[in-house]
Amino acid sequence: MVIRVERIDVKSAHIVQKIYEKSPGYFLNTDHAVAGPDAALENLEDKVPVPRRSPFYEKIFCLITIDSLPVGIVDLHKDHPQRGITYVGLFLLDETNQKKGLGRKCFDEVENFINRNFSCSHLRLGVSLDNNVEGFWKKLGFLRNGRTYEWNGANRVNQVFEMEKR
Image 1 (cartoon, helix red, strand yellow):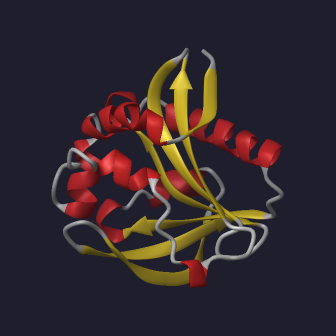
Image 2 (tube, helix red, strand yellow):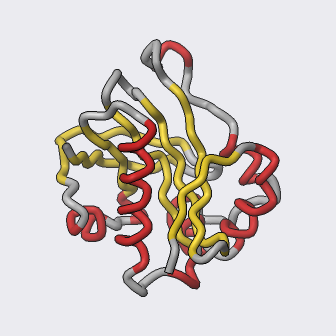
């Protein structure tokens, strides 16, 4: 099994959209609706407000493949909210590839991608209370950092707690 993490752009939106369509549970949990027809295009755009970015900020959207087949995506925010922190905006394997032990293997490759391409002292991510996957992230070494915030989804506001890994 060969797992790859490759940077993509808006030209790959149709591939990302298919992954979203194979992942209705995530969108139902977080937005109480399935992903709309333009969800991939919208998510490939950078929406972090300029005043909240570090001067070194960059959004990197990646496709995860297993044996050349698209199975997931990861949305990375390099140097956000400050230099040396990579914020994982979304890590999603399509539902046909969940609960098979692939999440850990795929995220290991995401970490390898980050280590090869960024100068990063630790990773940070948010977990929605409506999509509580804290157990998965704990198994990968992430711990709650005490920060919480509200995230405005397409159809609702989510309460989120942060986790991080050094």
